[in-house]
Image (cartoon, rainbow, N blue to C red; front, side, top):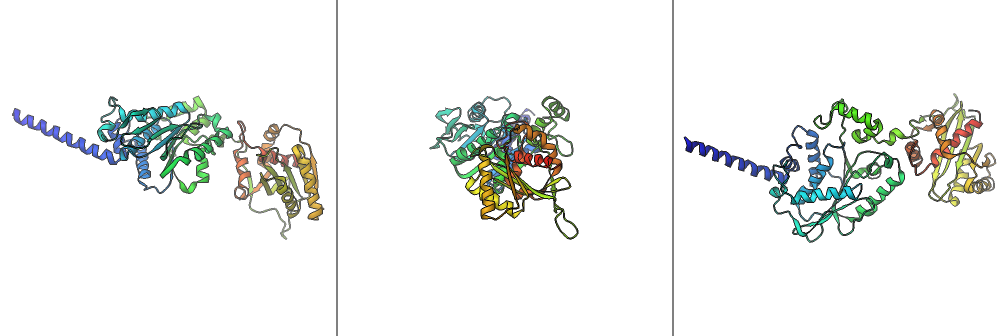
Length: 475
């Protein structure tokens, strides 16, 4: 009897060893199984979104997702950074020659990501693990004497394998097969600062991407703070190269992404603490600038007002021009027709070209649209611009119909823009396809923030001039 019990016990031990060996073997080739084996308490089968995330990451690595850029939007505390760090480990387990650069908000956070990644290879005493990295990939180790926190190599590699950096930080000394950027916008103040977002875009494209080597895969993990953040610009400018996955804390049906991590009541507490706008950006991936923008809606038309004989009903055609104050600013000319005290926008000329180009082009548009009266701000060279447009109109184009006047604008620009916003939304009417006809002007209008630093205010400033002109007409 005792002998039989001992055999049964031995059989169970052998069975468990076999199961363990199979689990390790599976973890080597399957990223979800790798996460499950290392951290079973977090990577539960019941957390389907985590399984979906891991499967997507592996599909991206294997090339099954035929895109160069993977974008992941996910709420805080749901495992996005944790999973990204484990993914770096798993990639190194696949091929110790792989080179990876990771980027975070600042050197402290990028260093923490790097240290935890390095320690995942080195450490063997974390209590929450069933297995360790070294059990799964015993041949993948840190090269002795080359284990600096943010810049290190793997044993057997002739080059550096890993670098952690941040916007403004260095990226020299290593190429990159993979770039992983994790939340580089700190808060809502940065989300409203266009200069910060411009620096992120330049750093990413002019510094990080320039280090890339095949297979040139990029992973962006970000909270959607702003519509023109790094992710927003990537989706706009490189949409054909991007694969996007989005996880919201509160699902469309009202259920939570994971009740074990955050309940509905806890989310409502967060809203009361940080405000709905910030909570929506952090947890629902709804860019905060869409809530903080000055202009919340625009009217459009499909057809201009005409009578039964298809004759225009416009009472007059007008134009307003705001010349560029500095080299980086835009000249903006808006031409519109007036009917029933409404301003129907017919044309927008929004450009950074020099005056040798903008003067004849503006004059040409005045003639083309049969402008009756044009107002041009004379500030910062505007009077010279106006005189030249008038001369070109009369001497070269023989346009004596357009009356061109210029004046000095002395009122505070921001106060003018804010105080006229409501009238603009109610009475300025754009063609239905205006976002395609005048894309730069459109973006400047829809992204202009009531509060915060706006890189350009030329479009709202000129549109405000439309409103002020309409007041003079008695609208």
